[in-house]
Length: 146
Image (cartoon, rainbow, N blue to C red; front, side, top):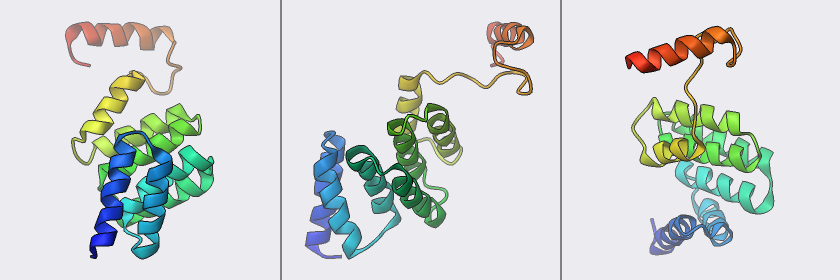
């Protein structure tokens, strides 16, 4: 890989870390044109969703990255960020949990803590606020088995 390509990736990563998604978008677009790697696709997808509000295209691009590397938790993290920008919090939490199944990934853990993700209901067939789910959930929590 050329120095230019590595430079684009480095600048894109730094811009993304600093929250400057417009600069990151430009860097990742150029890098993707040179070599469309899965890691670039998922980050580019988030930038597209954030800056251009192209949610469907972003989700499709991120899913392509997931097909290429299904065990990479960072792709699930980026997909969850796309869902959050699109206003789909429930889907975002599902994506984060799926990513955690593969490997401990600190950004996923931080995001779940920030979102205040709730545990699954004890009885998934009943509504979350059903008396059985609430009382058994409280009991299990007090016993330390949840």
